[in-house]
Structure formats: C-alpha cells, structure tokens
Length: 188
Image 1 (cartoon, rainbow, N blue to C red):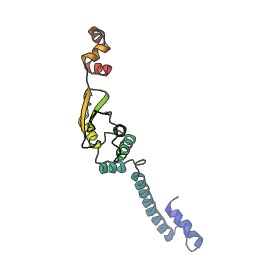
Image 2: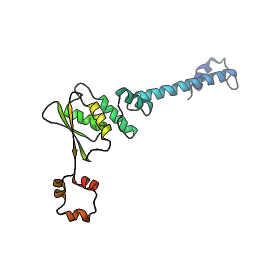
Image 3: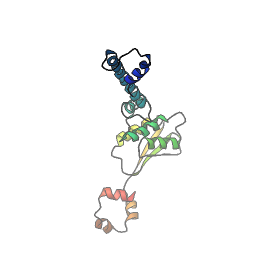
Image 4: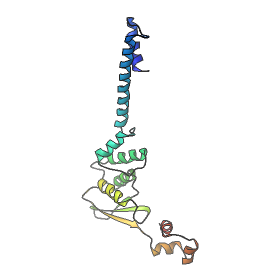
C-alpha cells in the first residue's frame, strides 16, 4: 500500500474531503509519492548498513573503511571476507584465529608457527609454486597479520623426490604426455 493511500485512509473518516478528481486527492498522492521515495531510500540504506544484507554500496563502504580489497569473486564471498576482517580484535592473533581470518578472506594459505613467537610460516597448500596473484595475496596477508611478526613464505615446488614417489620410471611420464604444470599438481 502506498503512502498516498495511507494518508487518504487516515483523512477519510473526517468526511470533509472530496477524493476522486479533486485537488486534495492530487496533493495527497503527490505527498504519498514523496513519502514512498523516502521509504524506499530508508529501506535501501538499512539494507546496506548491515554486512549480512548489504549488496552494493554497503560492501564498497565496508571495504573502504577496512582499507582492503579482498580478491573475493561474488557478493557472498565478499561478505564472508569482510566479516572475517571485522572479527579481528586484540585476542585474534592466535594461530586458529589467523587461519580462520585468512580462510574467511578467501586466501588459500595456512599459517604455522616456527618456534619463535615473532616468526610465522605461510604456506599455500594445494598450490604448486608461487600463486599467480601472490602480490595481491601478500598485501592482504600482511594487512591482516600483526605488523611486528616476521612472515616467511614457503612455496611447494616440484622436486625429484616428488617425481620419484609418483613415478617408477621416466617413461611413465613420457607415456602420459604430461606438462610441468600437470606434474606439479599430481605430486602435491
């Protein structure tokens, strides 16, 4: 129901207005249209204020406020990434919390400790070599992790040991007509 109709329903019991084709009805419809526009704007603003329901400018505003560009592909991924960043607090720097935050940001990385509390090892499981978008991933990772911690990046690469574990003879590799990229994925 429009606000014009609501205004008419409120004033009708007074019995002093003529409605159809009258100047008063035109005024009420005009005021009602303006109120409908305000209601639509408020509904959109309310939707965009909450991370759970934001679709457009709300997500962009959250990204601007958090000073991040997450590499998320769709709206739901972006919501999860921003929620992971918002969960960071003073006690969020446990190993589990850091891994949860990176996973929430859509980063295929795993954090592990190296014995020294100020050093962390970052690996990329199921990714052979350096990830294609490593510069962007590194920027996001170093924006999430505490700035006083040294991060060592470790990449999984194709080695002779990996090939020997997968293949008995080199002719198996040649028969399968594999590429280095497919070998790298098979040996991870």
